[in-house]
Amino acid sequence: MVKQTIQIFGRIKPTKKTLAVYSMDHQEETGASLEFVIPRDLVDGFINNKRECYKFRFQKVFDQHVKQDEIFEEIAKPVAESVLSGYNGTIFAYGQTGSGKTFTITGGAERYSDRGIIPRTLSYLYERFSQDSSMMYSTHISYLEIYNEVGYDLLDSRHEASRLEDLPKVMIMEDPEQNIHLKNLSLQQSANEEEALNLLFLGDTNRMIAETPMNQASTRSHCVFTIHLCRREPGSATLRRSKLHLVDLAGSDRVSKTGLDGMLLTEAKYINLSLHYLEQVIIALSEKNRSHIPYRNSMLTSVLRDSLGGNCMTTMIATIAVDKRNLDESISTCRFAQRVALIKNEAVLNEELDPALLIARLKREILSLREELAMVTGDQRDEQLTAEEIQRLDEVVNVFLNDPDPDVTLSLGPDMRKIQHCFFLLKSMILDKKRDKARL
Image (cartoon, rainbow, N blue to C red):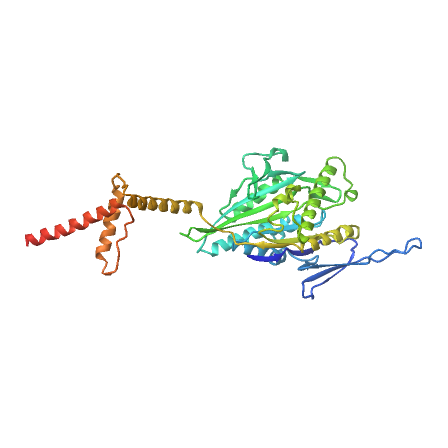
């Protein structure tokens, strides 16, 4: 079991506009700090007592000119390594619309170097698979979109959707152990990196895109790209199952600033409500002796139940726009990150027995127990030995007789039919030898 708080990182979005006054410090022992300074203005002779300095702590803060490969190496690669070892992992990006969440998680389409965390993680995992010949790996992928509190399967191959409503709706089911199951969410197997990237492309094509005044290509939904990994040694019945959630949250914007109306206003209300419930869960998890955590309030918090305060290694990326007009949202994002950093998760190695191999082993044990019971009760089996069983017994007896070790034993189990057949074989061999001596 690995106990640790959720790791938080900050990323500053590049901008050419008028910047807020901010500074970063990477010399602190506890990580990095990000500080905003807002000069006080004296208006109409009144004294402005507004706070001047806002300082926040992160594991690391990436400035405007950081490259995508550095983001992967520092943030995603350690989580991918833990998933390879059998632990669950989650990486989610949080911030206002246009602050760079989708660019960080998925990447840009213009240049190969702009690839985001998802394609780079897929490439890294399949590279590790090819290097480790001592293990057998299988990978399945799911892609969930949550739009207006309704889940949609972005990888459904049976539909050619022209609208989001054409895709299958995903429903949340809960078993008696309170484990979450997503009904109608397909799991697509991917044997190599190319197949996995094709699934990513298919899902991105089906994503709900709408225009807002703040960003002309703004995602108005939450998207959860999940890699399900199964690892096993050849011939072993023990396997490790792990999953990696890569989450691109919708933008956290004040409705008053976005200038929305109609359907886009409805979308913004649902987005802010689900993010509000996400914040409620995080506040509840950070409070000591809190008995109830409101996971069920929204679909997003239900899906991320394991990732928040559960069996998972979780990392958050706070994407920050440092334009002066976005300063309030940037400070709000950083405050949210500080609350997230208080949550402690307990990641457990997900090791289990392969059900198929376990069933085969249990069937053999049942057969052996029935044979022992028959021997004890005297109720012997009447059916004849099969040809395969007779051939196997002949081989076992020959190996027993040809072994020079005087302490070797002949193990036949409690089946009297097999024991009697072996006695018959031994008697036949002795009689054959006596007849051979008589001829001489």
